[in-house]
Image 1: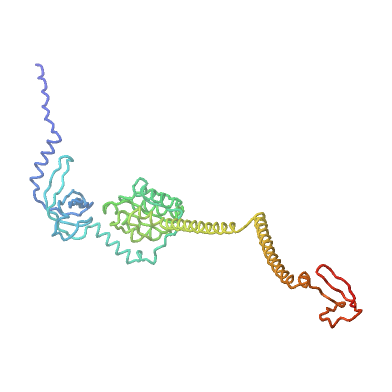
Image 2: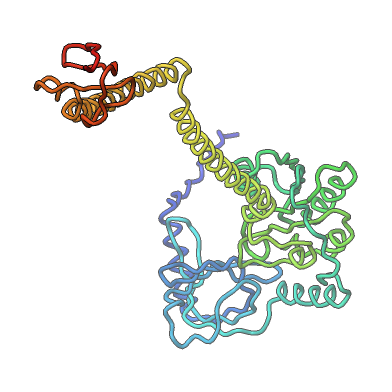
Length: 402
């Protein structure tokens, strides 16, 4: 037997680079789908400020990204793109090499009627409304000053963090219990129902809040569950629905006792009376402080006035002594003046009396002849042997008439 021939190794094919195979796919796909019509339901619609609209088209088995450039600037459009809307789109399929993805670039859109999810939403909404689950008469009032609330939400989501920050800032006295739950996906309704029941059974709060951030209609679909809606309606505690953004509505919004536009708004609503009370208390304290300060100022002024009028006994005695001295001096002066006037008057009278005095006449050489006490005024009154008294200016002499 001869030697076997050596086996030749098969030649390995040259590998494709990512760029090469992507370019190959692009060269095959884009020419083949230059203009196609695609029917589906709009999901995760994201209008951009540039006027472009980005969304997904989906059916029960598949989904494709789509973009309508300049949609917001089209003046002839008769409707707005929104999640759940069934549409017929015309466009071309393009490949985007950096992501290795493809999308439908849409140049024309025609609505086909309500989407399946939106239709299901409207049908359940009509059913529950007919049963009276949305009636305002059955809505429970939130406590004005809650001290404990339970929040059924994802513990890792931004919604609960926003709520906790707001409550800590506005009403730190409110205790918050977070009940973990899935808030997206097929299991979300069951988790949320279980969280509601736990809040009631374990008495975790005076109010229960269902919280979730924004998202597409699919993301929020767990809050459109009929069993969840009926559980909310039966809940003995007030329930606040804080799901999505202000433009998002779910069945939970309609059946809950209060719908908050966002989780942050729910925190502000729940703490609202606490904030108002704090502001009123602050205002009352300010007004009381001003009133006290004004009253103290008035009393201080009155005390200063009274103090200014009060004189110490020593000062009072000193003032009275000074007053007595002044009065004494004035009296002494007045008496001197009066005595001087009397002295002058007496001196004047004395001068007059002295001028009229008989003694003055006697000093001039005249005499006064008297018979006893009778003044002899005529020689006929004198007879012989009569005893007489003759007064001179310097004395008297007794004589007898011859």
